[in-house]
Length: 356
Image (cartoon, rainbow, N blue to C red):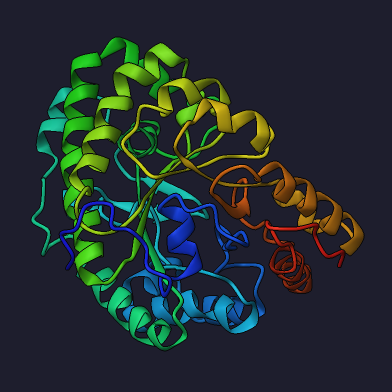
C-alpha cells in the first residue's frame, strides 16, 4: 500500500482518480451513487434469492453486484456494494433492514454508549475486505478504479439513536441537546471504528474513499461544527498518506459549505439544490462531484441531455466528477442511465460540447 501523500497523477492514472486528485480533466469522469442496485434486473434476480445482509456478507455476491453496472455502462469508477451500517454489528449493535436500517436497541443512555465495543480492524467486516479484493481483481484489466466507503460518525449516530429512518429525527436531535457528553463519547467511538474500517478497505484494494454524511443537512452550522467537523476531520486526516483521494458527501447541506470547506479532503460530493457554479467559490481547492437531480433520469432522453449539459457546463472552471446529487431512484430505466453515460462521455471540457 502506497504511503505517498497526495501523489501527482501520471498520464496512465484513470480519469476518475485524476479528477479526484484535483486535475481539471478533458472530460468529466462519471459514476453514480447506488449505480449497483435495485433499478437493475440482474440485481433484482440476486435479491430474489438472498437478503440484503446475505448479499453484503457474501463476498462473491457483493463483488458480482458491484460489477453489474460496469458490464452495462461505460462508467469511470466502481463502488463496492455494501452499506454504511456494515461495521456496526461488530460493535455489538443488532441491525435489520426493513427496507432501511432498523436498530434493535436504540442508544438512549451513556451506559449503552460505554457498552459499545471498538473492534480491531481484523474483526471489522472481513467479508468486505474479500469482496474488495475480488472486485479489484476483475476491474484491474479494465483500468477501472474501485471506491470504498463508510458512514460519517454523526450520520451513524443518527440511526443508532433514532433507531430507524425518520422524517424529523426528533429523538436523535433531542439527544444531542440533552446528552451532549454521551453524544461526544459515541461519536469518538464511531470515529475510531470508521478509521479502522476505512483503512482496512484501502489495504484490501479501495483506490478512493467516500465518507457519506447523509444527514448532515439536518443541522445548523454551529451544531455541525461541534458534533461533525472534528470527527470527520479526524477520519479524513487518518487516511492522509495512503495514496487515495478522499471524498466527502453531505446531503441538503448547502448552508454548511463554508464549514465543510475546512475538511481535509480532495473532493466534495454535492446534491442538486445549488448549481456547481455557485458552489465552487464556497469550496476552494476541492474537486466537485455531482450534481444531477436523480429524478431527471425518470424523464425523457431530451430532458436528460439538456439537464446533464447544464451540470457539465456548471462544472467547468475546475475539477469535476459527474454524478447524481444522491442515489439512483429504483424506478430509473436502465436505458436512461446508458443515455446519460453517452451524453457525459461526449461532452468535451476543452471545446464546445457535441449534442447527443
